[in-house]
Length: 442
Image (cartoon, rainbow, N blue to C red; front, top):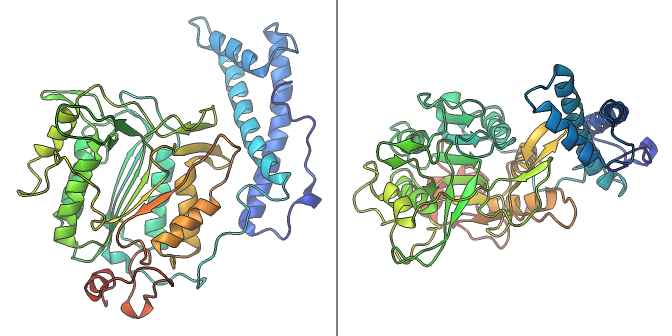
């Protein structure tokens, strides 16, 4: 029978020992999943009988048949309960399949030795001089929902407040995980995201020049193919706010283009310094992987608009400083002096989220935070390489390569006192002026 686990059983003696506390908890969770899977497969057999389906009918067809009945106008509570049981069965099978892949190689899922960095303990970070805008969008008004973006954003928020001791008032957290709330300032609409960037970061008098600034985004990305409405040879990539494509008196709510973000980051650098970290767990291509019930890409189709419409929104923003670089520049390029940018994958790949034992999460953010919680002595380059090594591999259909870009990628993450700065051998050593911004004496 498709998806059956009847031929497989746990043999705890073959699992690598000793296990860390985290690995032991994960292994116990998988054992519970295995027991639950056996129960659900018995329930699937009973459902087949109730719906008159033969035993040789594939599980996928059983699910579709029950789904059609449960979504019909005459559906009963029993039909809906059957559909939930089959949905849970799909989830359990996916979790167990992931576990088996690593178990048969003598290791637990994600239990391989973490990449290490010189110095096991984290250095102290002055949390009061860290500022962040954190965005997570599961529910869109005009797009299919994601499942793990809000969990990733909440995990990032927890890391900042707990591990780095950043005051909650220093963080603007914007989430969309339910019905739209346009009037809520914490709803990640286009206007609220941009307002958070301008008001909480660039124009905030409490943010001093050289403070550590973080912008984190988890949600959909979109790619706009270059056209001939103006001189532009490159595609434009964009972040997708929760209210994208909603009607407004001026037209529609538009995505936030990479050019619009760079124009902001240049102004932020000029006013607050270049100690800025931007982290994107999204992608701009949906062609690199096959989505399943347990895995999906953070990519959505672009809006049906011209590039001129998209960029006019940035050009007409009255919050922008006069004299800033035009978003219509023919030779536009990402200014690597503005920030260190960490992205979940290459432009041709997909940033995936997956159903794990602890719920839906993005592969990239989950790995990134696991490493940062162990130590913050990484340089950005080391951290990116470690994330590549640590991210799980799920067969030949999955390739996701994190990328780091920025003049400061050879510097340590976050900032520390001068006497603790020690760039790795071969890394670019920042100038004295840059060090004074990155590593102020507290």
